[in-house]
Image (cartoon, rainbow, N blue to C red; front, top):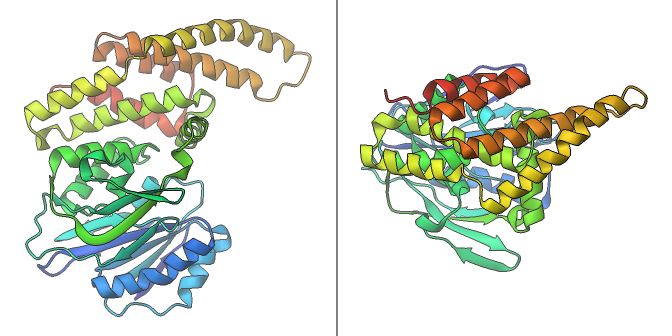
Length: 371
């Protein structure tokens, strides 16, 4: 069975496991047509067949929906439901994933077509709804392959881990509560909460080789964080510090949302860790203070000059960077959650960021709230 949902069809894909045995849903996002991607497209149905998957969701973000054309001509696995979810390349992956609802004794995970993976995805018959199942995970660094254990893995590993319906449903409720648009750093938040609320079970007999080449150089890391914050909706405020701030506040809000699902001790420990991570180092704080001093001079000069010369969005960009720098500094200096939320409110009043309005409200209503 093959069902296609195009960009105009916002219907939620509801996947129900009617049986008692654990079922697996695998999601394959596709953005580019490359040699390695095509190889993975060819293999995905073989894995679906050998793993007896409950369902396979193909998210097609390729130009001209080339992936859809490819799979329309492919031989479908006999026992697996196959869905093609067509989405624009500009839509964040986790926003796309919110279109998937799973019910019954079901687990869900992702495979990315620019990585390498092989094996069989098969859950033990006694899998429980409070358990997550990692796969064998390695990172490719040029020609070197480094195997990573669970404790030393990057947050992205949670994407390639089977998480149960009970946890996934609660996480989608968290997404809905903050407006249905998830942060670009959602893998960080999802990883944190899954480790706190679920029990890790033994690795599956499935190998995943993650290509982390985009994060090897510091300059590329900064560029990526800046890009993610812009995609997320921070507009002229986008930058490394804003993205890191966004990641921490989002994780904090999710921690409070899942509070009842974890021990009081674990909750308190993680809250303190996240609070500490909001504090800037002396070196970074000094750099930002100097940058603020420069921006305080540049913004009014730019506002004056644009009356005579076209400057495009330069004034808006500099003004946004000034707001962002002040926000990051003031949050770092805040002594309580009330002060942090006050700073978020100030930004909310200063600049309209439509994609983030609901998230700001969610932060303000949830972070630091005891019940």
